[in-house]
Length: 419
Image (cartoon, rainbow, N blue to C red):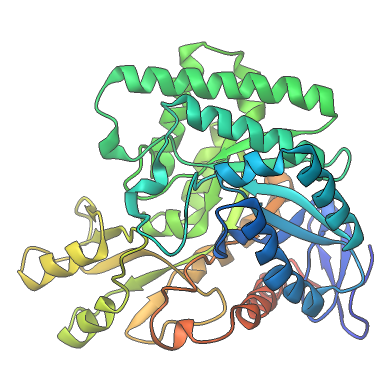
């Protein structure tokens, strides 16, 4: 393995898979077992291809200069539908291939969850549209795989992450579920043919998220069972090409342990396509001052679903944080704890009485040590820098990303993976 910045290296050993060296101030991009780590560029603005490329120059290359200036650098690329269409133009594609080559960068995964704008305007539940009931979502996803076959290094395994079918309240009929299964089956067959043609292992990761069609690991497994039972494509082909993008924030919000959720998915034969290293808010102090603090996290761009837990009672869900706060103030919420879908920095505690779910990430890495074959694609995905309140969002985003890399690799080492 190449070392990047001289003077400091880590050797990581994953049980049963040998060891690998990561050099350069605690960062790691290409890991053992053909595994890869990047930050997801959905954290930056960029609806058009020109805007997307500008953010790569303005931010990603500055992070890279601090990370690994002399050796290959992994990029987790986000492409909107319009940016993907523009990149597919031969002149743009050729120019980007040259851009990657000149900078010794490579793309191994694409975030295909947000179809349109993702910053600076109201996103909320619109982020799930178009969903998998539509041909637009299918065509967009096919295009992303076409592109990644052109820009990823030859023969490299490549992934795309996507919405978990739809938002729950958008689905009102069995016909919609039927259309979704047809589209996903068609996508899997397309990926099988493209994998054979390109000599790559291509896979799509459906990303469970609170209040979506499937949000818990049990719902995800049941959805996959229904897809397999529909018989619209070969069972082995579906399991090979369709999997789960496991977002640690999302499953922690659902009050699931990593052992429970990953174990259920793996035991049901579901592929872990990619893992998002991300952290959510957690709170068990509901004083007036805490609720006032939480109001600072209510903002108009993203949906911040809340899952409320009260002992062994069934979980209660709120579509957005302001609705949960209102219920609490009116005495309708008596939960002992809230888990809030608000991605917060991996490396920084939100400060008591607020807490984070970063322990879920540590548990994921514990499992990875035991099952290194579980997944090879990893992304850090704190996309909320523009809307974080107070001290959490005041630092330069490049500095924040550098610190997230530090935290992530230190967490690998702290959990016994690193040596």
